[in-house]
Image 1 (tube, chains in turn cyan, brown):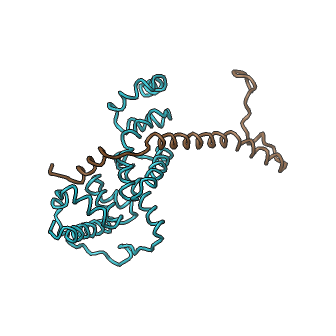
Image 2: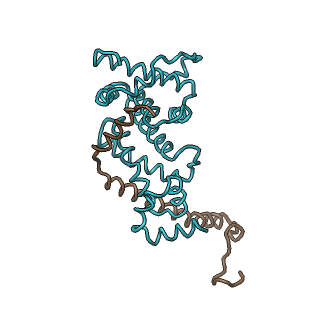
Image 3: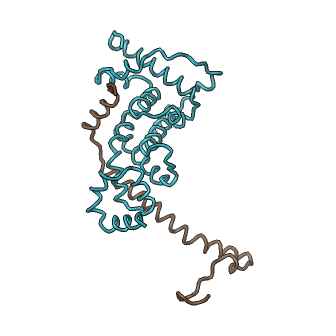
Length: 207
Length: 76
């Protein structure tokens, strides 16, 4: 009852109250209200909250402003069309970023038309200890961090961003990459190794 | 919570980023409107088209379609 009244009020006073909802409601509440009312103003709130972050990710992975803008439009359309399937097991932001990374990685793979050998295909995965401390990576100077991220392979960059920028769980990363959890751990380890190697190549210095 | 320069980098990029936000937003809105319109059209016409096929095949569409009274609050 309360939700219905809220939705009716939102539809009537959309422009006036969208600003206040923007700060007071959680993503999940806005998603619920959007599903019930299909109000464009509620979509605007989600768009305003996440468009910059999604654009930065697209631009950083696709390395082309125009492609990133097109990708962002496609991603938000995909999000809106699938919003009713969002099951709230993860945060809305995690779900949105999963779609973003998935879209960008697919786009890059299609562009390259390269057959990559999956770590799953190599054979039984062994648990290899991760020797690179996360702290070293997280404390890398920002300018250097950006520079190194720009030269490592895009999929490795995406993995590092998912793990360290968006705090996505191994399971969520696995869903984006369609890989098992052990394969994801292996990929993270390899991405970190490539990062450290590139860092040393560029700066002639240990991270 | 320790230092995380991945997040700091994101913050820095967010301050500098420039893109055609309103153009993208209107593109999304118009695409969704088009999808909604198509969906509504299909919802409206598919039962009628199916009924037409049933009629053409010699069937009786009265069993498949819902008979509604001509006026509200009157028995069908």
